Amino acid sequence: MEKLLTGKVISVNGPIVKSVGLSGIRMYDIAEVGPDRLIGEVIRLAEEIAIIQVYEDNTGLKPGDEVISYGRPLSVLLGPGLIASIYDGIQRPLVGISEACGSYIRKGIKLSPLNAKAKWNFKPLVSSGAKVGEGALVGEVQESPLVLHRLLVPPGVSGTLTRIAPAGSYTIEEPIYLIDTDAGAYEGKLAAYWPVRRPRPSKTRKKPFIPLVTGQRVIDTFFPIARGGTAAIPGGFGTGKTMTQHALAKWCNADIIVYIGCGERGNEMTDVLTDFPKLIDERNGRPLIERTVMIANTSNMPVPAREVSIYTGVTIAEYYRDMGYSVAVMADSTSRWAEALRELASRLGDMPAEEGFPPYLATRLAEFYERAGLVETLSGKDGDITIIGAVSPPGGDFSEPVTQHTSRFVRCFWALDKTLADARHYPSISWIDSYTEYLSDIEDWWKNLDPQWLTTRNEVMNILLEDHRLEQVVKLVGSDALPPAEQYILFCAESVKNAFLQQNSFDPQDKFCSPEKQLRILASLLLLYKKGLEQVRAGVSVKEIAALEEASRLVRLKSEISNQDIGKIDEYMNRLEQKLASLSAPSKGA
Image (cartoon, rainbow, N blue to C red):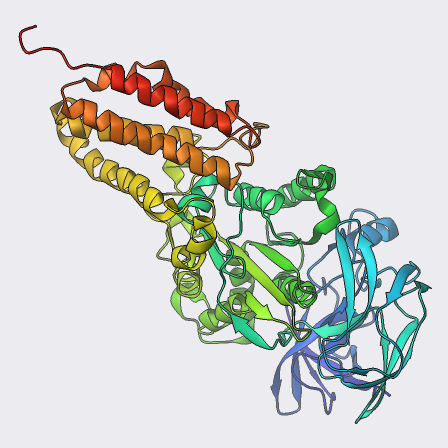
C-alpha cells in the first residue's frame, strides 16, 4: 500500500520549489504541488528540505501551499497504445488534452498516457505452470498494422506462471497473468510503469554491424551510422537540422521511430505533427505514424518538462528494444535541453562552468547517449536503439560546450555547413568537417552488395578532399593556372557534389536512394574520373569531356532512374566509357 507523504511549500523560485515535511521522500520521486496538484519531481534533498522542479506553469504558487507525494519515481506508462501517440515531455497525451481544454494546457490536468477503455486482442503464448524469467514472452497484441506488441515479464520478476488469461480482448488495467515469485505473487497487466531515469536492463551489449540505411547518399555512403549507434547533427540557424532529422525519420530502416521535439519552435513541431500522419511508408504502403511515437515539448512549454522529455523518449525506445525491435530516437535539439539544464542549475545556485552550463553537463549528455546500443535483451533477442541528436550551437560555433561534449560521446558527426545551406545544397552536411567511426563495423554488410564498396567510397572521398585543397589555390591564382589534370579533378568533384551529395527531398525518385542505386551512381562517378583522367593526361581537354552529353547526364541519373531500374545505370556506364574512349587528343602538328 502506498504511503501518502504531505508537506508545505516554503520557497518558490520559478519552476524550483522548496518544501518541508516530506519525511521519507527519495530523489526523483513525484510530488504534486499546490491546490492544482502540479506535477513535479524531487531533484535534490538537503536535510529536511526537498527541492522540487515543477513540470507545469506554477504561476500563483505560494509558500504554505500543500505538497503531497506517494513515494513513486517519475515514470512512464509502457504498453499497447504508445504507437501513433503524441505526448508532452511528461507523457501527457496532447490529443486528449486538446479535446479536454482546447489550445492551451490547463494547469494540473492529468490524463492517462494510454487509453484505459480501449480493448486489445491478446494472444497467450505460454501455459499455466511454466517457469518464466525476466524478459520472458507471455503473449502478443497487434498494436498497429506495423507493430506486433510483445508482452514480456518485466525486469526483476521471475517464478512460476500460475495463471494466464485466455485469448480475448482486454484493457490495460485488467490482470493478464499471475506469477508466483520468491517475494510473493506478481500480477501482470498489458501496461506497467517504468522510471524514466533508470535504464532498462539487458543481458549483454554487442558491437553494431548493420548500417542504419537512411536513403540519404551523403550519410549512407560517406558518413554511415550503424543500427545501435550514436550521431550528432550540429548546425547553425537555417542549416537544415530539423529537416535532416525529418528525412531520417521518414526513410531509415528502423522498426520504430521515437521523435522528440525538445524546445523547438511551435511551427516546426506543427509541421511534424501534421505531416507524419499523412506520410506513407513506401516499404510497406502503410502510414508512417503506425510505427512512430512523438514527444512534443515546444519552446513555449515549461522549461523543466523540456529537461525530462529526452528521458521519456529514450525509455519508450528501450521498451520496444526489449521486444527485439530496432528503434531510432531523433532528439531535436539537445542544445535546447542543455539550456533548460542551465536555467534550472542557475536557480538551484549551482556553480556555473563554461558559458554558464552546469559542471555536470557532460555527465548528463553521456548518460543519455549511452542508452543507445545493440544489446541481447533479457528475452534473448537482439534489439537496438540508435540515437541521433541535433545540436544548435549559437552562431554555428562548434567550439561551444554542448557541441564539444556531444562530439566526445558520439561516433558519428554530421556537421551542417551554412555556406552549403545558403547555396541550397541539401542535405548541407559538410564532407570536410564530418566524420564517422562506423566504417569498419558495417563494412561486411556493404561488401555483400559490392566487395569494392570501401575502396570506391575512399577513392571518391579523396576526390573531394583534393578538391578542397585545390580550392585554396584557385582563390589565389584562378583555375586556369592549374595543370589540366588538376582542373579535371575540380570538374569531377563538382560532379560528385551535384550528382551524389545533393539530394532533393521533394523529388519522387531522389527523396530516397537505395544502397544499390548509391553504389551504381558512385561507380559511374569513379568511371568518369579514372577514364577521363587518362584522356586528359593523353591530351584531351577538360572542356571536351565536360561537353559530352553522358557527362552532363550523370547529374540527372538520381532523378531519372528509379531504385527499381538500376540496370539502366549499367547501360549508361557502358555508353559513358565508350564516349570517353572515342575522344582523341589533338595531333602535335595540328
